[in-house]
Image (cartoon, rainbow, N blue to C red; front, side, top):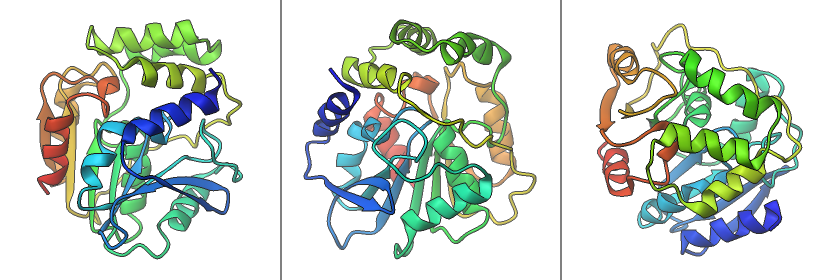
Length: 258
């Protein structure tokens, strides 16, 4: 199965009507009532927009959901990839143009993008799902385990890495297949994340912590997020890469608690 076929197959799992927008070369999957308040879902690096198949339909019951593919990453966007943080913020501003009272939801690298944007531009509220490089850095063991997969990407290496991090949880095979194929797509180096120096302009924010995450130390993440005034909620059985596809009820409850 090609990457495009696997992308389409996982997108069908949304089980709601999905519209496809092209915003200057950015592919955006859209669902939910046209007059609903907007929520923008930003996936982790390499995960692609269809990864929200367990979340988007639930949010689409009351929200207008927008899930873009980041240019330069795996996905269907064709726009020039952002090279700097300024480029990245300009890209997201284009996606958000015309959306009032926008709610940003991000996972992993997508959470860093959402937080970086929300500290500079108006956002109604912010939800960060096991965020990386926002409040604490990645564990050296996680980076070391990921490095062979990044240097010599292959489906077996990627799947081995995900099974290691998710620690026996039942990973969806269609999502795993798509994400493994994503590692083989021609992509550009992502904009390097830098942790914010100040959180003075932080909007109402919820941080969802995966208590079994191997990506970083959940306790440190909790402490640092608390210190910014954010609300911190815990998913006791979740790991970094079991989100956002598993623990759906708990995750939706956390997102809608704001």
